[in-house]
Length: 115
Length: 112
Image (spheres, rainbow over the protein chains, first blue to last red):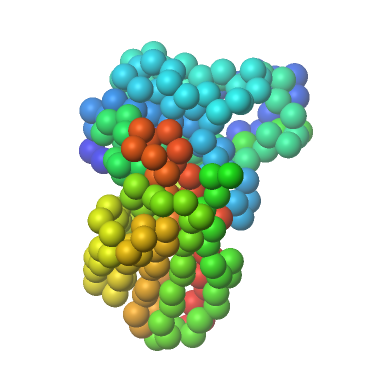
């Protein structure tokens, strides 16, 4: 199994809603990532979890709250988002938290629309 | 800044023509990775280059890392419609994995 699975594939939410994005991998990878990708732009790093601990937060607003319940799962909790937060949210994993030296496996993403 | 630049931004080719995208950094890179993202898809890892002057081939794709480790290129020979997508380089600017940045990408269209 060399897949990173993300759910849901699409999400529409209002600015007062609370929702969660989920990501799962069963490759035994010990690093997991959340990226945000706007249309026609490269992925931008949001968070990195290394061995289930948050190791990097790229100054992401607190309305985005990551969680890593175990080594296979990664969640992104969303609350009081703004329309400009609409984007493709990509989860990725790597064998070790050695970003740039280990290849990233990306999930297919959650296309989020905030109304 | 920590920018990695790519040119061209867009490229339209006729099927069968060759294609090259270039990745440039103002600072030396520890290594570089290339990813391909199909329209509506997610980035997929293609290759990693580590050594100065390194050249790697994957079928019709040839990847090069510059001697100074500040630039890299991806060349596709005889493009096919399956090559359509955006090609991103991603560079590591230090040995600690913290400064790993994606270039803006080159979007390739292949006309049949």
